[in-house]
Image (cartoon, rainbow, N blue to C red; front, side, top):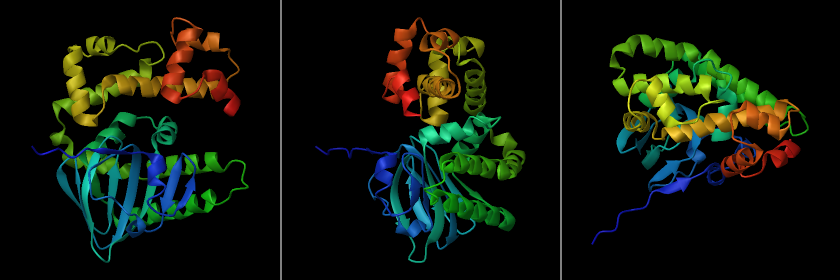
Length: 294
């Protein structure tokens, strides 16, 4: 009997071992040549965000079993939970690359007004072409971020890098709008439901954590909502809700002096103990320890 190959989880820490690069631990890695990355041939499920620009040659790979080909002037954008395999680069392949951890990416994207649109764009366009001036913009941001990452004595290094990445997303947003205008007719029912769901989560995650509530607001069943969200994002509605709730908790703990009891009430948790267990399950430490670590 044939034994199916296991899909290996590839987290951010493992990614740091693929190649030498400039990085901020647990947050971001910059590689000035894609070719140096020793991508595995077997199936790997990504647990971080990868964004890169091909400057020469080409690379082929499969994402969720679908073949992709990255060529000069094109950007690759791979979000978490996608499965990558069959990596094969031409001898002359070159490019630059950002690898961003999910928590750091969420911190950045919290300031973007339409997260769902950007995520949906990445899902529908894992590879997209940049105009020459947009390619130069990408390269310029890469060099500026790289210059800040190596400033280890800069007390605000992490905040500077986060702000620069946010600026890059905004500066390249015209590409997203251009693609949306061209391919607006190709948006599916699942895409629409996912976009509506994420917007609801953004607006209501402080008080609502039940999938059934979001399904009711969208006038569909919880099962159908789960199916549509998983189809688009490879994640469950619960995982999206937890991600937004956890991010809100991190922000409140970092930027306020409210007690854990007050935060539990504000975020609609039954009590302080319940919030503590929830936070530790998703972050790996208690709210108090997280606050002290800052």
